[in-house]
Every structure is written in structure tokens, then in C-alpha cells.
Image 1 (spheres, helix red, strand yellow):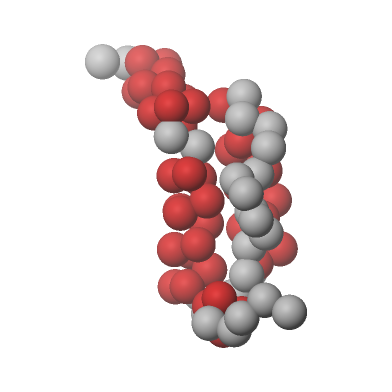
Image 2 (cartoon, rainbow, N blue to C red):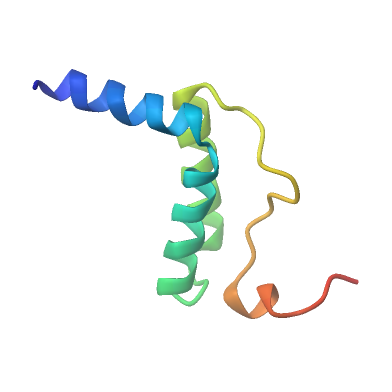
Length: 73
């Protein structure tokens, strides 16, 4: 399989399950202690645009791991 085929398969997987983009970003935020939240958000937006999924999931703002443990005000 050539690189284009691999990229197309990845795009199709993300189109059918766009939550993977959010989950991937959340994993990076957790691994980095939330140091790069802004950059991860930009990368997630670029990934959504690249696969044709423009909108963030419900409540789709990235939070640092510390913020995820706190109740919403």
C-alpha cells in the first residue's frame, strides 16, 4: 500500500469517528501535563479541517488534566 492509501484510510477512520481527534489531543494534554493545550487545540482544529469535520464535539474545549477533575461552574 502506498502512502496515499494509508492517508486515505486514516482520513476515513477519523471522518467516521471524529471523537478520535479529541481523544488523541486529550492524551497529549495528559502526557504533557497540559503545557501545550493551545498548540494541541490548533492541531486538533487542523486535523478536523483536513478530514472535513469542522465542529468540535459537544463541550469540545480542551482542558488541562487538573481542569477535567473540577466541576463546571
